[in-house]
Image (spheres, rainbow, N blue to C red):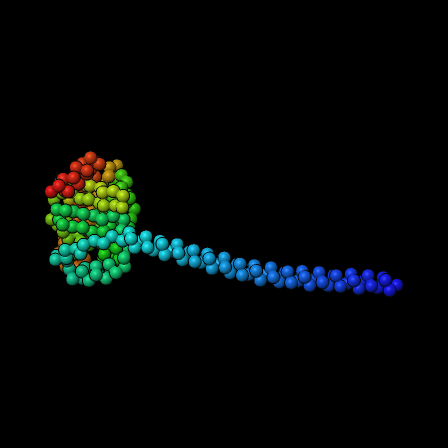
Length: 232
């Protein structure tokens, strides 16, 4: 009887001991898991922060620093809007150059007022830059695009993108009503259409639109033009 009682007590002691050990192990595992989880979350946060910093740095490196434009013919309202707009820096899709007019202006994605205040805008729904079709670019008549009043047929325009320079030759200019959207209709060939309000010095909302239509030159023609420009 006594031997049986001792065996029962021994079994109880072993059971309690094992239960305590398991309880301690469980608590240890929970604590380690929580610590490891917090370290993992912190590591993920740090990695995302570093990735964000790297992307921000790359974005800043891509920002195009353009020379201050010739604003002699700009309206005071447009100049003030430009000075305010350039504080919100953003990478443009391209830079439009018209050497004959001494015009250099960024082309941003979309024609929001912010984009048009700090440059020109790629008109929504028109062809993408570098793709065949009708690429529309809009600008204010009392800002960057005021110089278009002196554009002539035969002038060469350039679109500088991060990977290439595209050249276009002006084939026509015309004045149309604002409702005439045919000027932005799709084309089979690579076309650049510049749009601004008209008359250039009209007081108040201008009643017409001034359109410049240009066709893209071949790669050989573009290379020849660029080589001539470098040697001049």
